[in-house]
Length: 431
Image (cartoon, rainbow, N blue to C red; front, side, top):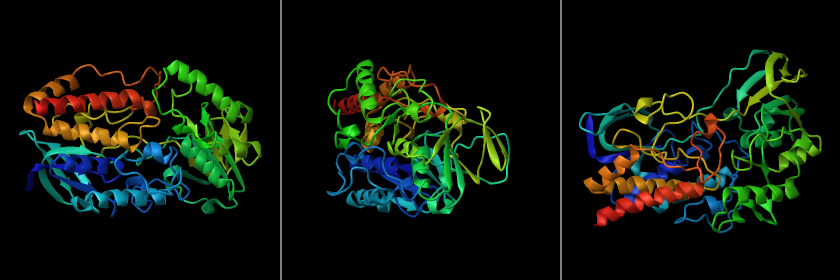
């Protein structure tokens, strides 16, 4: 047992972990970080042991709405950078702010345990040390959500987290299960190599093109946000002009309004459907030997079934009760998706929102740093609010009640709430 009692432990060196390290350092708070991989970047480091990106992966939000404000991406970076450019960006961010030396790379965090004195024991790399606080920033897209499909299959069933390159499926018949952003991207990737590609869809989606009027779609409305119903009305009609009706291509009609679930930012899927390069299939009823039976009673033969069924939250080094969570479905019940019931434990990056970008994660980190630096009375007032009713972070949108939407927020409502708490803590500190 060693002691680092005055330091803060940061778990993860992806975007949220780097944001945590930067905010702590900027506020004069001593920290040490732990990262399983041998470099920064999180999932955008395709060589990392837990990276789930594939060779053709790019941002689905534009660089200008995603980058850290104080560290813009280099001139000449494409509107939608690849994983290679993003890994280089995070390496540059770590080097620019001197963060790299603070991380212990190639180190697994095995346990984070509270102590009776209010501090935390962290076991990592075979050594246990005591820390003032712990910031958990190990990401939300590393632990595959693998459904159990009834029946048996003689081919290969794999999750999209194991998908790297389409050449591995050359000449094969592939069924992609799930039509979220990853499922659609992978289906588009596969059509150039596989013998046949189908995509199985349980529910309808809204499709947003990456470009509207020659500009990245998410840069067109960056002023004062419109009220939800007006924005949904206007944008839905604008999308019809650019993408048409996805039901025409075989997709079910959405059971929700635009922005009440994460839209699919991909117009190439409709392009390839229109060219007959792939087909939409209903939900899977069962696997059937050398094929799949669908809920409409049809059957088709496949060599591979690729599950683009998303990810689940995964904090294996923590007792879920410390996060107000049962450890299974849904999401931890944390104040502002950051602060749990036990003092000194914070989670960063457990948010999903259209357009929140990495700056939204950095603002989370600034709140953590402000909380750690605040005088006792200000911290007590914050902690009282954190133990009370949860603020409405929906911004007036009626998000679908699904596990994958359990930590979805409206970016404008969320950032206002986080900034207000940070300002209150800092104002109290100055007083």
